[in-house]
Image (tube, rainbow, N blue to C red; front, side, top):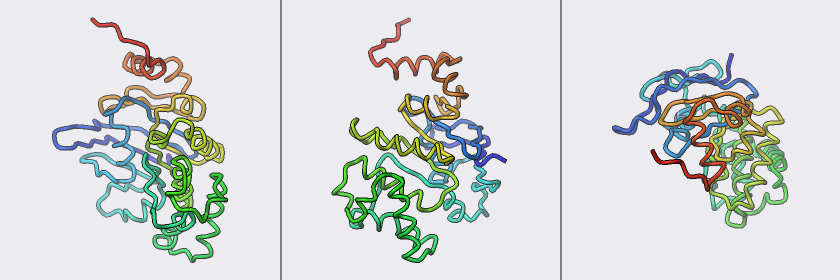
Length: 251
C-alpha cells in the first residue's frame, strides 16, 4: 500500500481552478520532488495533502485512511504529517528547545522529560544542538528553518512535506538546509518536496513531478524528467530555470 494516494484532486479559489484532477501516489520511503512554474498549483497540492486547504473534489488517503472523509479524525491524521513552510513560523517568544517541545506536550501529551529528549535528538540531527537555549531572533534564516525541521521531526511523522523550504533564505544559507534534507532522505524518511532547487531534485529525488496549469504534465526518475523530458512544456520550463539568460523564440 502506498503511504499517500491522491485521487482526482480538484481545488478552486473562486473562479480560479488551481488543481484539475491530480492523481499520484507516494510510496513508503520515497522522495518525490514537485517542480513547475509559479501558479502551477504545487503549494496548493501540498497544502491539500494535510488539509490546510480542503479540496472540492477527490481523495487524499494517508496510510489507508481517507483524510478527506468528513468522518475522519483530522487532528489525529495530521499527526502523521510534518510540514515545513517557506517561512519558519517559529514562536519568537520561545527558545529553540521550547519551540520543539510545545506541540509534543500539547498534542501528543508527552511529558516534559520525554519531549526534551526527543527535541534534543532532532536538534542534534539538524546540527543545532548548541542552539537549544537561543531564541529565533538570534538565529540566521537557515538555522531557523533547521529548527522548523527539527520541530516537525519531533512529532514522529510518517511523511514530511516541504513547501519550497529554501526560497526565503539567502543563497549562502541554502546549502545547510539541503544537507539536512539529504540526510533525512538517506535515513528513509518519506518526503514530498516542492522545490526550485533542480540540483537537489536531480540528486535526491526518487521521482520528479512536473506540474503546470494545475495538472501533472510529466513524472518519472530525475534523469528522465530533468535530464531528458518528453513534454515540450517541461523542456520550456527547464530551459528557463537552468539557463536564466535563455530567451524563448517569438512566433
